[in-house]
Length: 154
Image (cartoon, rainbow, N blue to C red; front, side, top):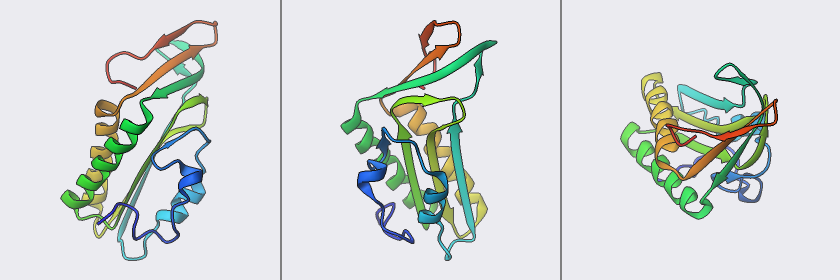
């Protein structure tokens, strides 16, 4: 089963860029696209640029990725989660380029018959994206300095 075969509407691959997107993420459209009436649980996670980090004002984040490898890895992570958790729906997309404060950098959607599977799968997918997928985050601070994120890749 492919991760988005049962979507209410077909995925617009040009808009979403599959799992990597340089465009802002349209959160209401993603909710509508992946909401599944056969699922009893729908979990939506949006990781957003916050205005501070380590007591410093953040102006924006900038993401870079090895795009083709990131696409393949995210797809594999989703496919594995769909099978392991018996999901009705699963999708993830990560931004690249500049992501201003308040905008979504990553979205993970999971839907299943019951909440335990939907929550567990959602957490598993975001954790694996952040630790396994070649995406790097540059933090740009209000004072004009910048720093690549340490620890978790992004």
